[in-house]
Image (tube, one colour):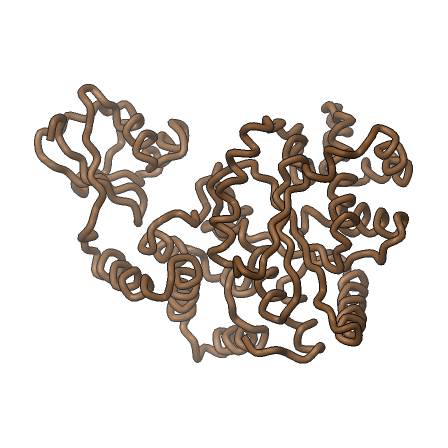
Amino acid sequence: MQRLTIDEQVALFMQGTEYGDAQLKQAMADELHERLIEAKKERRPLRVYCGFDPRTSDLHIGHTIPMRKMRQFQQQGHQVIFVIGRFTSLIGDPSDKDKLRQQLSTNQAAINAETYAQQAFKILDPEKTSIEYNDTWLSKLTFKDLIDLESNFTIQQFLTRDSFRKRWEANDPIYLHEFFYAIMQGYDAYHLKADVQIGGTDQLFNIVTASRKLMETLGEKPNIAIILGILPGTDGVVRMSKSLGNHISLNTTPEDMYGKVMSVPDQAMSAYFRLVTRWTPQEIAEKEARLADGSLHPRDAKMALAREIVAIYQGESSVEAAESSFRRVFQQHATPENIEAFQVGQGMTLIDLMVKSGLAESKSAARRLIKQHGVRLDNSIIEDPNLILSIDIAQILQVGKRRFLRLMPPGK
């Protein structure tokens, strides 16, 4: 990407941001403009940071939204710091939860962290990315340090947060250690002397209130909050989540990724344009204008979106085959050419097979798919969730519109 003017950089970096307050958004844009001018005069890049808690080893494209924003900063010559929260993950961010988040063990956090950088480098330039682990500084804080940090905040400030307020009103327990999370994240920003901190709308309190206040109190210029919208899942409504089954995994096949993007409802396309593509604000505005005046068909816009997302995460060379597979399977109603084989065990139930093969996240999810008539065996709808499979010859199992499995008899 070519180097942009300061005004163009501000427009690019603010693309996809949501603050819930027009004045706050304008204030952040103005501060970003001033900091860019200041950095140019000092001939230095901005220090841009985002933290990622390794609570799972399998990421989906919703997780990559802040990484995409970091990449935009990288392409404009700024310094990107990718922080893996091996210490903050021991608490778990309570920001978007209406109940206590399960604490992660140190060992599990370390195991998950090993996969994060590898997946992040599908987007970020590894030669221009600094990887940091926040346990290297947070673990050294003393109890006195913690008292000094906590003295900058009141309980009332935390209880005004929507997640805590709902639990308070429902008389559900709120644990003291949950208050530490925002303080720890704020200390990360201070320690890194960050000019910019990136996060989702669920991070608004952590960044705007905790990080900025702590940095100023500790003698650093407060960082600029880049608060990004939350990506809806393939249902177009609810936040993308692996547990809900509406996610697009980074580690899936190009064909599956393309097909899942094509299943996204038309009304959610603008969010995908802004949050998970490499398109500029001008390119997005042009596509939206053409959609509005009818000169661009929603199907064609979505296919362009699917090509873009597959190219980002699977490589340009994967796009043509993925699109050809989609056309063959979904537009021409053909069976895919290459289907993974699965050997059916003696007495195996359909539900157990779906979970074991990864076609369903859980037994309850498998039952729900069967109940919704979303499971077919050799093109016949299966309605019995307790069906015991008896496979004598190879058969094709189809779950939803995009997932196929070739069932093989035992011993084959």
